[in-house]
Length: 228
Image (cartoon, rainbow, N blue to C red; front, side, top):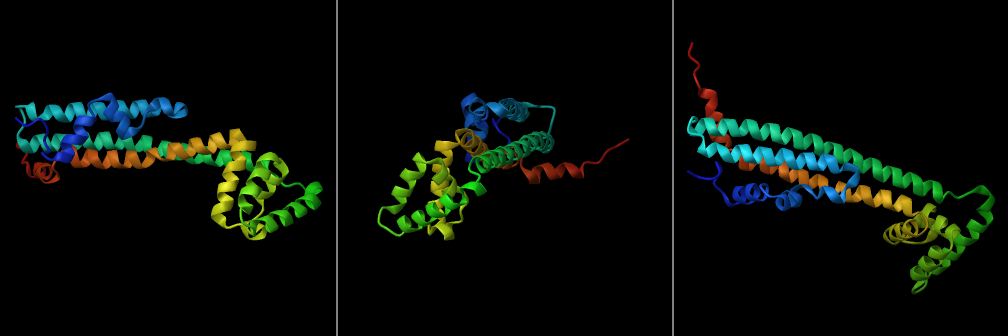
């Protein structure tokens, strides 16, 4: 008998990987790297492991026809995918919350205060002048890394006012956050790292449906006639 109901290289690769801890880490992430949601990721690993274990046992089930095996596998897939989707949505929400929290911390740290407006205006003029020179962005970065008030100007002032292109300013903003507001940077990067797991869960959920069962075979179960 075949090992898997779906006979394809993609199914064999996904299901084989999902039977090992290392394989599941590649599919759903390593829980140890995400301490704030480690239990959720661990539970997702267990959900996938159990689903694969059950579906790979079906080819040896002599009490079911091929159609019945695929129908049962579809049910297993739906249950497995539902639980993975629940975790996926929770991770996406947590990632967004962490990035928002980090941004809020950075906004508070780099607040431009009215009592410093005169100095801030001079700093903006200095940045405008340096931005037009060769190597000016590097000089602005060096100064901002050393001076929190200049860092606040770089962080808060719009790019068109500073004369810096948006891409360069975004890079400068992350640099000064990492230097002067490490807790904000940690939260933002943690949220960003966590958000990168979401597409992996999406891929795993799609693979569950494409590798657990053959839809055409499973649909034939609907033609079953129940007899009293």
